[in-house]
Image (cartoon, rainbow, N blue to C red; front, side, top):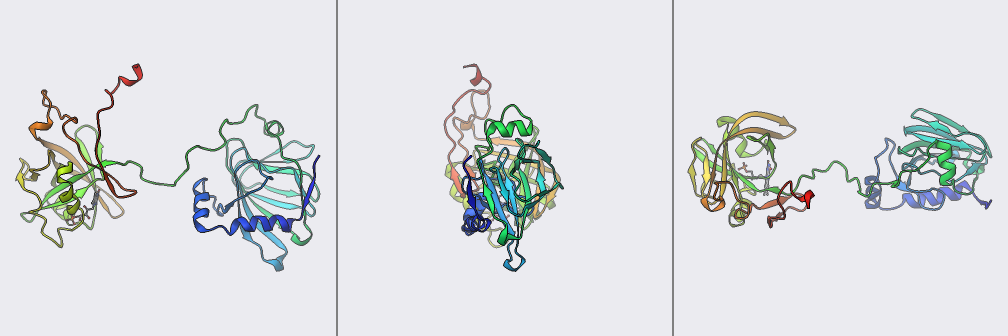
Length: 354
Ligand SMILES: Cc1cc2nc3c(=O)[nH]c(=O)nc-3n(C[C@H](O)[C@H](O)[C@H](O)COP(=O)(O)O)c2cc1C
C-alpha cells in the first residue's frame, strides 16, 4: 500500500489556491452542479477524489485552530482512503452519501447525519451512486491534525460498500446545467397592432405561445404603451414578419408609442374586428382577448383567433399556408439576433420510417 503523508495545512493550502480562482471560474463550476445551501465553492483538483467534488471554505480563523468547510461530491464520487491525526466531524446537509471505516460496513448518510471520525482511523466518504452529496466538514485542532492520504477507493470496493452491482455509465451529464434559462428560441417575430383612442400603434413581439388550436398567448411587459389599448379594447392583431418588413418591425420594438407616433410606420387596413391589419405582413391574425394571466411585470394575454388574413402568394392550391413561400423571420434572445427560416427538410411523421 503506497502511503503519502500530507499535513492538513498543506491540504488546505491546495484547497485555498482553488478558492482564489476568479469569479467567472466560480460561476462555471456552480453551473455544473446543483448549488448546495452553503455554496458549492471551487472544484477540488488533485488525486484524492475519484471525480468532480467541490470545496467551499466556511471558516478558517487561525486563532480558532479549527476549520469548517462544505464539501460536495457528484454522484459516485468519493475521496481516497485516509485518516486524520485528531479526527474530523461530518454534518450531512444534502443528498445521500456513504462513510466507511476500513474493515467495517459502510454507513449510509442522509440529511442530518453526523459522523465523528476517530483519530487515525482509515476511512472514506462520498456520494451515493445516484445522488449528489454535500456535508460540512469540521477539522478540529488544525495545527496538529495532519491527514494521511492513502490509495483510492476502487470501483469494486465502492460498489460492494454501497450495495450495487454496477455504476451508472455516465457519472455526469454531458450537458451543462446553465440554470433556469428560457430556451424556447428562436421564435417568430410578430408586430402587435392595437388601436388606442382611435389611433393605431404597433409593437414588436416574440414572446408568443400556442394554446390549443385556436388560441394564443402574448406576453407583454406592463409598461408598454400597447398594453393599455389591449386592456381597454380587448382586441389586437398579430402580424407575422418577413424579411422585407423586418427593419420597420425592429423599429416598432425600439421606440414606444408613448413617446412617438408609430401609427404611420406601416400601411394597414382595418379587419372585421376593427384591428389594424398591416398590408406588408403576408399573414395576420385578428384576436379577441379572453383572459389576462398576470406575472411579475407582464400581462399575458390569452387570445382567441377570430380572423386570419393571408396574401394569396403564400397559400397553396388548397388554400393552406405554404411555408415554401412564406418565410417568417425568427428572433433569438441570448444574442438579440434575427434568423432566416430555411428549407423544408422532411415530411412530418415519415422520418422514422426511412
Ligand atoms: C425583436 C423584439 C422582440 C420583442 N418581444 C417582446 C415581447 O415578446 N414582449 C414584450 O413585452 N416586448 C417585446 N419587445 C419590446 C417592445 O416591442 C418594445 O418595448 C416596444 O417599444 C413597445 O412599444 P409600445 O410601448 O409602443 O407598446 C420586443 C422588441 C423587439 C425588438
